[in-house]
Image (cartoon, rainbow, N blue to C red; front, side):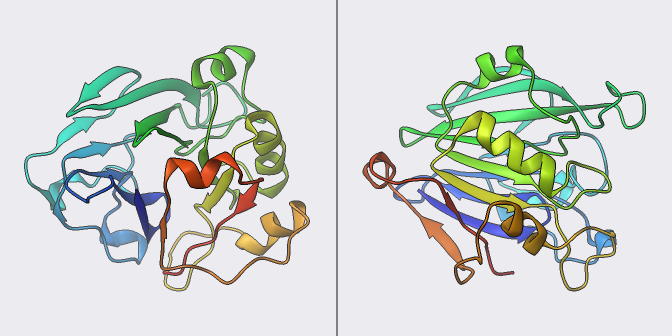
Amino acid sequence: MTISWYGHSCFKIANQGGHLTIITDPFDKKIGLNPPRGNVDIVVVSHDHHDYNNIKTITGNPFIINSPGEYEVKGISILGCSSFHDDKKGKERGTNTIYLIKMDKIRICHLGDFGQEKLTDKQLEKIGQVDILMIPVGGTYTIGAKEAFKITKQLEPNVIIPMHYKLPGLKINLADVKDFLKEMGLNGKPPVDKLTIKRKDLDSKEMEVVVFKL
């Protein structure tokens, strides 16, 4: 499996061999970053905002998933779990969908624009074991560093990929990823261009934070 990042909460996940790809939360250029383009098999959208639902630039007639439920697409299992975009049970920003993607025997959890202080017992039960966690850390519209730290402890993934934080050119006011690394007690390893990983790599891996270059 290979994971690449476009910025914000948008990742491209390609299976081993690269013949099947997923895009998460595609944004439009209004946020100041270059939107994802190209042929994709599956697009998952956590909520209906312009910085998360720009599917018009995606080609290849992808299967669109934009709501909670259980999906099986081209041999890939995806579970959408309902959550809130804020810590007021959705009264301020509405709902958000967490996605658990099972590909190459690896379980990826993408939290989308998650805003709750913590995951509920019901959500934890639905999500289950997580190998790779994609978690917002920039605050303002989602959880910040402190809440993100607590949620990583709830899920205990092998790999943590922070997202939705301050970036050069981004027109949304968010906190720096360094705040999250500080909460985790890490100085941070050098950022990577992409992450290539196999199931066997995870079996002996302790919790690790991977920050992407943009």
